[in-house]
Length: 180
Image (cartoon, rainbow, N blue to C red):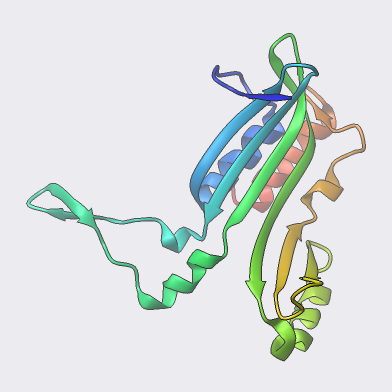
């Protein structure tokens, strides 16, 4: 059983860097923290959208008057939310490690006419993402694609702990790769 987190703890460095980079590159619309009351597990969830969907405030005479209307070309991006889940462990009320990271997007699509393109792209990017295709058994016309980051494959089996040399190295690499 998880409880919604109400207090503020310091996250492990790897999780802090990851959240910081995600928030800089995506438009985060929802963020919540949970911790287990029966075990030492925490869970962080984010829902995000493409950064071009971030609302822009419209000002008139220095006063906010509303939001600018989005370009028609950007409206289809609304149908492709991005999700991030980070799971780890706590000790004595403090976050101590990151054990699991999921970064993924889902879309209901009709990929039949573009299936060869999707397969080509999935193979081309297979080192960084996994693309799954799902078909509903009762309604074969209803299909969806899920695109998962392979970021979790980089974590060691026992996760990354606070003060862990590997955690520091991965944090540095993440910062370098993402432009910090």
